[in-house]
Length: 234
Image (cartoon, rainbow, N blue to C red; front, top):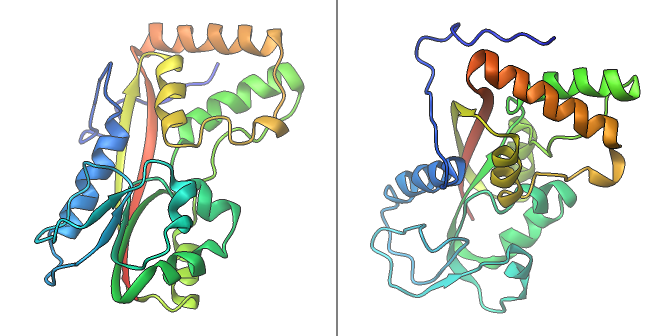
C-alpha cells in the first residue's frame, strides 16, 4: 500500500476545516495583498468574487459570478481581478489571454491565481495505485494544472507588461474524500477529465477502502497545493 512521510516537513501547515474552502479563501487573501500595492486609483474594475478588494477603488466594480460571462461586458475596465476562476478558461483556450487583454484599458491592471504543477502530488500517487489495481494502467484524473513559465510566456506574447509571479506552497490535510471533491469542484478542477477516465464499482470500492485505511493510519490525507499569483499591466 502507498506510504507517505507525514513528518518530513517540520514547518508543514496542518490545516483542518469542515465548512469553508480554505484554498479559495487563501487565494482571496493572496490576491488582496497584491492589490493593496496598487498606487493608482482604478476607475472601473471586474472582480470574480465579492471578497476581492481594490485599495482606493472608485467603487465602480462589476462582480462576475460566472467567469464565462466575462467577455460579454462591452465596456473596458482599469482592473481585472480573479481568484482561481481562470483555471479552466486559460487551459481550454490560450487565445483567451488576448481576449482578457482587450478587456483592459491602457495601463490596466491584471491579477489572478492559478493552481500550478506541484499540486496534488500525493493524490496522484494514490490514484495511480488504484488505477493500476483496477484498470492495469493510469487514468488522467487531476487538473488542469498550469506551468508557470508557459503562463508567463503567454502573458508576454499577448503584450502584458511587467509580469510578476509569486508562489505559495501549502499542504492541506483532509479526513474526507468527499470534502476534497467538494472543494476542488468549486475551483473547477474536479472531474475535468471525467470523459476520459474510467470508473466502475470496483474502482469506487477500492478508492473508499484505501482512503479509509490511510486516514485510519495517518489521521488525514495530505493534499499539496501550489498557488501562483500573477500580476501584470496592459
